[in-house]
Length: 236
Length: 381
Image (cartoon, rainbow over all chains, first blue to last red; front, side, top):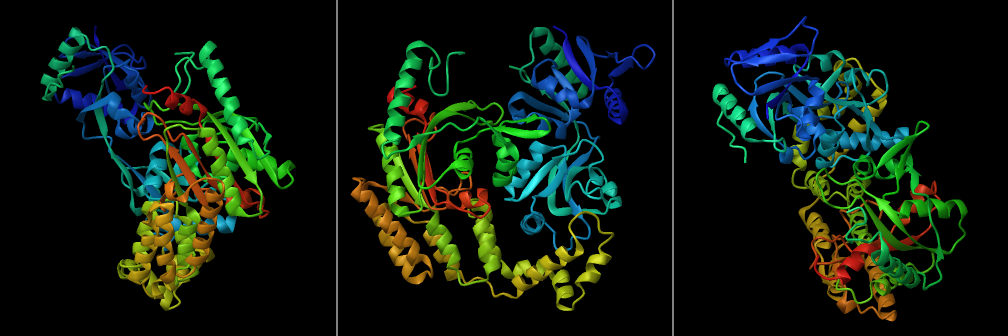
């Protein structure tokens, strides 16, 4: 069967993905008017492109409906808790850099690290009668990180956008969010904790372990890897 | 597959189901032997209460759903729902038995069951706590019958007493008490109060200097525009607390060692008593908890549970859900790594205080997993 390769359908991530493949001699052509989410690939035989929102690609890979896909490591680790069993990283792509970090108001001079955050959370809960709220959309990763650091008396509040504004808006006391330069956090009077780096992420080409790897798909993968200068993963 | 249930193939249908029902009836009769009444709390519980008690970790371990804007949780255990029920309706003393499914989320890819049965007994009775501890242990052992389990006991009361007895500031004792259920963090705190005390102060040099010179408000103001609900006053208050901690001499190594020694006690309950008596001579505040430990062993002996045969581990119970604060026990199946503890339980006086808005009821209880018990009796999987 044809090898299904999932690519981000919009934004900078799409453009950089197209450039990344082009730099390796594989041309991604957009069909039609440019609004159509269809594309084809020139340079390697036996590969079909599927354009999807980057956030949907981890799930499609995990389910084996895509053979390969380009998405952020943060989205994979958050969305697919047992990802190492389901996915393999073929190639980190050197763009889409994003750090998932824990940040608190700069005015919190008493809070330098996660252990301080725990101490502040204890005091906060006693005074305000509710747990210290941490706004994030990365619930799984943040919860695991906080557990690892032994933080108690906090509560995650869901934030699907403009997370850094949630402290100012009084919907959270701290945030755990993606940042590339830290400037948005600074603009919102937030500071990253000394040991508050949860994950360093970049766009990555993933392979789905449970996709139907028949002879044809394996052959397409081998020739793609050859073009990309990657060792043949030798799918069993 | 559809007729399977936790640890039991075919346990939802025909003969397998009859067998389970008979086993449950037998277990419930054993657990109710001291006069407990049957109870069935709702399967759907208000999530907020459980989240408030256990924190975010419970969200990863329980199924949460929503109804009319309120979050509901499929009960992850029976203890909290029964405490609620008792507080709302109960008169003391009261004993309850129950059996029903509980639901736990498991890590992705995990084959551990998401739904399994618990049969249990909860005793709300403030008189003679050591007798009540022994009563519950006896009931659970009767329910287990001659199943090949390894019984382990512990006593969170000893650990908490050893913390309370530390000759140091209340702030340090409070911090240690708060993390007694997180051994890793607990150990890190002990290090910060002890051998790493100097490094901790060095790390905060700028802030501590400002505190010493009364410049805290200025430092906060200089740190940037303040956003959020946590006020400058709160920040300054914690800075004062950290400054006080920095001024407090480091926890002497022998105090750290004594606390670690209490946590490291293991052996038969009789050997443990000997070790604890020795430690109590040099550990302030521990003697009363050791007396309670001994009274419990005596109460067990009177009920035919020989203390010589009771395994004791002081650290047992430190990694369970954080509500046990006294006697704890678990019945493990060492030859069956595929099965969870067959039974477990303990005392949770503080939980009733937390749920009763300060009105606490001494309480102790335990559960048996009927499916796992049957699977154990059935031999190798």
